[in-house]
Length: 308
Image 1: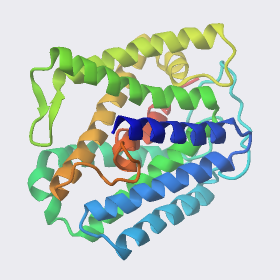
Image 2: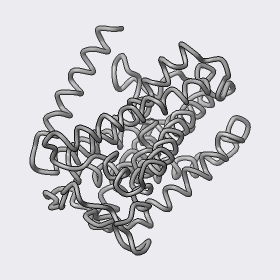
Image 3: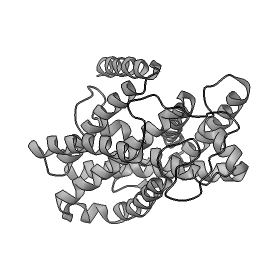
C-alpha cells in the first residue's frame, strides 16, 4: 500500500511539475481539465448515476470548463500577461468587472461564495437525512457547477504566477496537516461525528494556527527573496491589514473543512470509503481535491475585499 502511494505520488508530482515549468498556459490547463473531468465522473458514480451517465457527466464538466473559460475571457491556452508587481492591490468596482490584473468577473466568485456558504451549511445540517432524497440529476448538476467554478479559479490563480498558485494550494495543505496532527494530539470534541468521526474542533483550530504561521513565513519570503508574483498572504496583508488577514485565513480554512466534510457526507451516503480507485494508494481525484473545491473560488472572492 505504501509503495503504491509513493509511486503514484511521484508520477503525479512529475507530471504536475512539468506542466508548471512550461511557460505556456495550455499544459497546466489541459492537465487540470483531465483531473477535474475525472472528478465529475466520480461525482456521478457517488450519486447513483454510474455507467454512461457518469461518463457523460465527466464530459459535461470538461465542456463546461472550456465553454465558461471562453465566455469569461480566461486565457486557458495562451500565455496570460499580468502585472504581478508586489505593489499591486486587487481592486474591484463592480460584480461585472474582474479584479485588477485578473480576468474573471468578481460576480462569479460572489456566486461561488453564496453557493458554498449557504449550500454548504444546508448540506451539512440536513444532508445526512435528505441528500439522497434530492433527484440524482440535480445532485449531478450541483457537482458540475462546483467543479467548473473550482477549475476556473485554479486557472485564474495559475495565471497570476507560480508563487501565488503555490501559496493558495499550500494554505489547504497546511490546514489539513495541522488539523491531522493537532487533532491527534488534542482532539476531544467531535466536529461532525455523523459525517466524519475522526475530525475534531481542536483539529480545525490547529489547522488555522498552521496556516497563520505559514502566512507569516511566506510574507517574509515575498519581501526578501525574488518571487515571480506576490503570494496570497502578501496580497491580503497589503489589502486587509493584520486583523483582516486573520479573518480571511480563518474563513478560507473553515470553508476548506466544509469541502472535506461535504465529500465525506456524499461518500458515506454512497456507502464507500474512497471516491474511486483512479489514484492507486490515494483513492480518487475527489479525495485529493475536496478541500480545494471551495478554497479556490473563495480565495478570489476574499481578494475582492482588498482595495488599493
